[in-house]
Length: 294
Length: 158
Image (cartoon, rainbow over all chains, first blue to last red; front, side, top):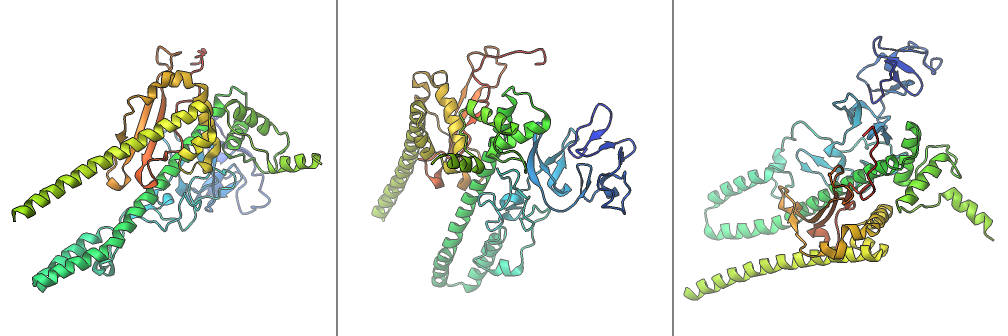
């Protein structure tokens, strides 16, 4: 049920309210009922199913913002629209990465799309600061773009699929031209024109490979952070565990946390130390320490 | 005409030998990098490890964590530098030749775990020609390392 856990009571526990799946309604009145007077106070997801997800028992979330967080044993998108998640075999909702997030489309690699290696889209380590894939990111399409005539007739096209067409066109041109000398000259010209294209396409492959490598590395490191926390043997509730995992990944803390000696920092630091991972001072600690020193 | 034939055959042979030599050079370079990495691990030299891994400045903490694990368990993982003998380099199976990578992979069984209840430790070093064979391409070298080498504690739940 939208990534929430089914309780023994038969209800789904959202952060603010309990949901009764049999009735399709919430158990208690909406805490934001006064703000949304047009809505039924017990309605699930503002009665607009299919438009988004229920945000922790408060309201429908349909805007395109989301960040990565840890829930249970999985990494998932919190505050994300339905289009960025999918339902797993266990019925939970998980984050899905579109090939478009790293610049891949069905018509080939798009090097100018927002990319994970430049930090413009995709999975990011700064879990609390991530605001979701950018709206202009390339998307995976069901069908490839039709190649326009302009692309087909251009010899320097970079569109995949149109190169062969150009070759055919050239062979027709050649048969029309007919003179050996002209054909030879033509071949040379073609070669010269195509060299920059060949170089460009190689660099695209390299860039795509770097993108995939970066996404793979970050996913493995997030997975390892979860394992470090789970194997530490420290008793934590689910929320604390998730916060500690995020702290172990990149030192981020939920907004408003005590940055001096909170439990998240205590647990996180001890996990980092016992696994030989470096512990950095937070900005506040640096300031505090510099005040003590003369 | 004959001389042209001979010259062309000679050229073909030369180019083949050049290719073979290039491949040998590549493998030599990869082996050198692998050996340097293990040496850096043995010496617990973080800076050297950082220099050997591609874009390691982006994830210094992870490199440090892996070095800590490998150095601590060095005698279990690489007793008498056994992993440095017979380094096997494999090619990845990828459709496009531009994205072919080479890798060296080790599977290491835990000696505390004779019944194979745990997954073996997997160490993978990937190399990618466009960035150079003197750098390790993948950032996360270890798999299944968390809890590896520790005494197995069986609880009724397991």
